[in-house]
Image 1 (tube, rainbow, N blue to C red):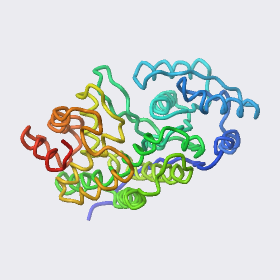
Image 2: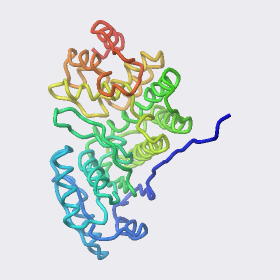
Image 3: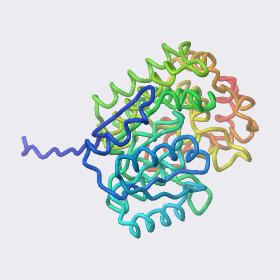
Image 4: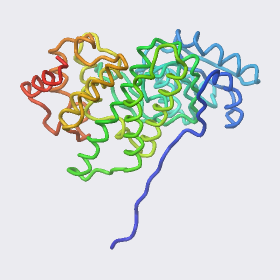
Length: 354
């Protein structure tokens, strides 16, 4: 037997604060983590009003120097601009305040600048609020998965998140449920491609998805209890990715389908909504309980068909055909050559997606 040379690095948030009026603890969190000044807030016009102004007020009251900017898109130009501002202001920490875009920009810009990042979600629509991965719009118009770093702290105020459009919370639930097929894809890659595989990451990811499926009925509009449950599930999903050191426990063929649809559809739906529909179809290919997935999504009020997504049937078919091209290095149930037009049509038809 050769010398033991296994090596693994894992990254997790040092502080996670979730609950009613959690935002009010923002200065306390910064003090406990010994985060200095200036604090740089990255947000958009909407999330500044929802949470950014209050974050600034609380930090300045605690004698933190605060700088800020608003972004319009999560793309490389905005990341470069934010990174330049972080350098010019000599920021000690970057806050991402919002849903997907401000958090992704803050995550990448702070990573490039070599400073910590704090995630302040105003909606629980995806697990990117905790993960070290960012979804960035590339020059070609396609979404790219970019390596960054996980937040040093997560501050999730359930009062704010429960007041966000319920559709966003449902999308977050669907994103968690998609772990069901992501872990199956990872298991397949481990068996057929000898890919690194973490049983602990898979266990946490699968458990989180199963809890969401089993508790779909408790997710209701305007309820802080619902926001609490979904936030905890998204944090768990992010932790699974931290254990794995990659997005494997939470991103497989269903995400590849969604990213393909982002490029192909004239008007794509929300990320979580699309991966939910993708999970139905990919679970069918895995010979799993795809009807159970569909039932849970229906209970949540999430889309389960092309019509409910607001996309054309032919766009779904094309996305299925090209999904394997999104991340060719990531082996999934779609294989290396993907689905034929006929196979894609059959898959979408039998699962009643079209």
